[in-house]
Image (cartoon, rainbow, N blue to C red; front, top):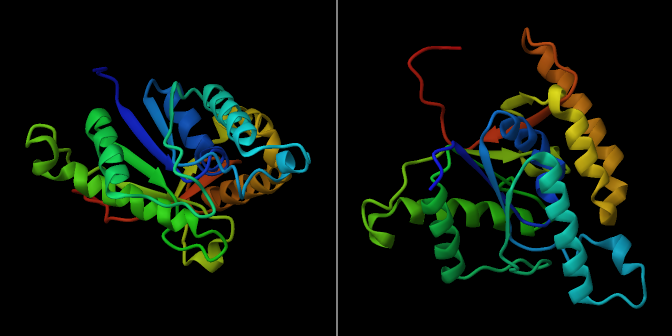
Length: 240
């Protein structure tokens, strides 16, 4: 197993990680981290509007094209490990076996942190389901009874990336990550996701807004940012 430090992103659909956590992926990959993205679905039914405009389109073709897009975006961001669980979308449904499969990924990687969706989203029920699934798998991965005490992981912090309508999701930006140095990389990843071209401009504006907010709340020069909400308290020995 690699000695490199690892991060894990659990994405409901094949493009969510690009819009919401692409900056974090590119930033940490540039620092030598190994980043793994787990896509629970391809977004084949609800998040592939441009592809479904073709009357001859099929579900299998949509899955194939979204997989290619997601893999290309991950490569641009510097993520060499992207995995697809193919659990379906609209609705996303998981089983106990699925939880154990993701828990085994936790135990394999032993990530320093986990990024996933908000716990509420009235516009997309797949997102909170993915968040709860990711956190349930984390709990199972900490259990000594899954594959023994030596396999059990410690408690990686979980950060929830920004939903499309944060005010409607009871989500607050509690951590703003400066992604200015990797913004052009994230933008290229955006532009590789052709099935959802309508979101490129929207998430560019979000990055500018969070960058302005981050600069205002710190002494850090920042133009582009990504915001996250914490699930668990920060444990520290000093204020910062």
